[in-house]
Image (cartoon, rainbow, N blue to C red; front, side, top):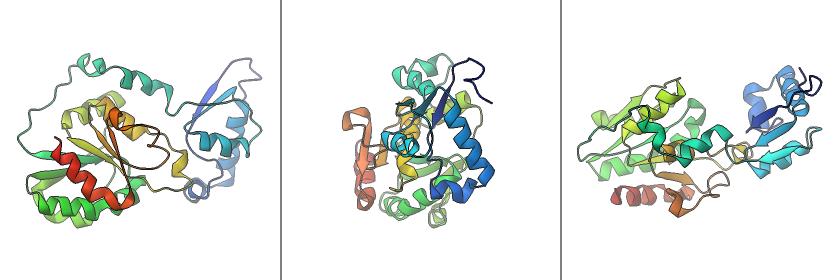
Length: 239
């Protein structure tokens, strides 16, 4: 494979450090890492998620054509226009006075959710009208399972259009985006924030480079590690 040899132009959207120890621990076969490098070196342009990742990759591969876009180009239309939902006739359920917030994500971020589970538990204990949900392959933390019907999980939906419609229809008052400040995570896209925002869900996110490129007037509240309880309380008070 080489698009350059075929005289075609190609772009690779990338959001992981090829040689990161975190990545290699999970997908670290030599042939896989070699294939990744070959791909990145033989496309015309590499679209990176963060400047940090761009700097990392430029030290590892013989590629000089980079652009940092912050997030994949196909997501821009979702953020720029809320008309996405009306064209597919997605409508929100008229919820009761319950205050529902949640976490949407994959099981690969289980540690991130587990880290803030004590704060979520305290919120559920102190505010009986509050409910918590998960959406995706992420598992409900064990310490939250004692809350019975005040917690629930929604299974992953593979069709992207239907996935966004389902998330929109959950009508969460806000969505959580905790993220450990690791080398691997500093290369990630802010896709969780973007998808929440596209679904008209304000975001509470860790104050890390992935999310602190956005500001308070962009439907996001940044959270330090020891602030999750207080910021969730503020979030529920403003619904």
